[in-house]
Amino acid sequence: MGGDNRRAETANDEERNLINMEHSDRRRRSLLIEFLLIFFLLPSALLVIPFKIPKIPILLTATIICAWLLWRDPLFDPSQFRLPENFTPFLKRVVIKAVIVAILLIMGLLTVAPERIFNFPLSKTDRWLLVMILYPFLSALPQELIYRAFFFHRYQSLFPGEGQMALASVTAFSFMHIIFGNAIAPLLTIPGGYLFCRTYARTGSLPAAAIEHAAYGNIVFTVGLGIYFYNG
Image 1 (spheres, rainbow, N blue to C red):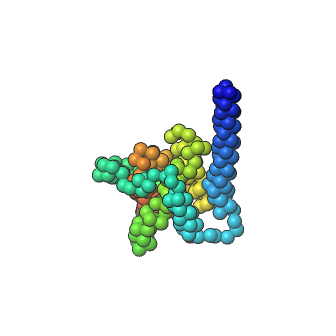
Image 2 (cartoon, rainbow, N blue to C red):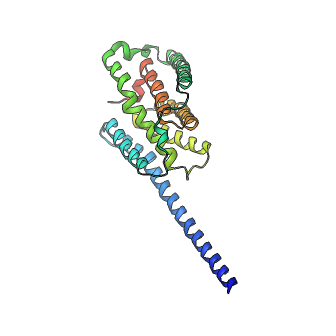
Image 3 (cartoon, rainbow, N blue to C red):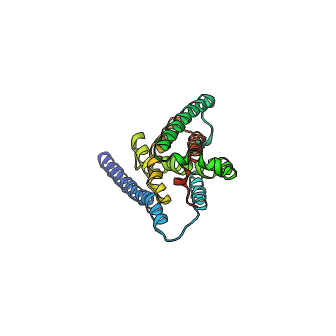
């Protein structure tokens, strides 16, 4: 009798394991379809539609949805919305990297399009100041919430390991920039996306990644490359 009970328990365990595996496979397939639809089909559709759609409202709507999904997920760690530990050393590193990025971008622009150097702040100072103030909150922070906090949490089962996750996030982040209709925007966001992923993975802080993103983004607009990231 005891042997029969053990065999029955073993059979039940195997059946439960099979059901769990099937559920896990279905979950992964649904997440993969969701991932492709959101991060590749949607940007492609925004690129090819024959009329302009304001990008910021779409970004903010997506941000609200992603934030809501994270908020209602009991497995998400809300501490990721806090500033990183040792904030002052982190900020110093961001400033140093931002200076290096600015120098590299200025050198590159002087080589290929010197007439654009600082054209935006010099010719449209009021609009440039508005971008400097609003970009961190209306663009950098929403993008980091979607492509780092939401992405890393939602798709961790699809891309196990820090390297795979970073590659997937950078690829999706870069591909999104095809909506601006030029090759420069996606190419420039590859190294930027990698740095933001690295910062987020090391600090576990969404504000940290957003601060770094905002710093580089404001530099891009200031030195004269903003034309590739804005189409009205």
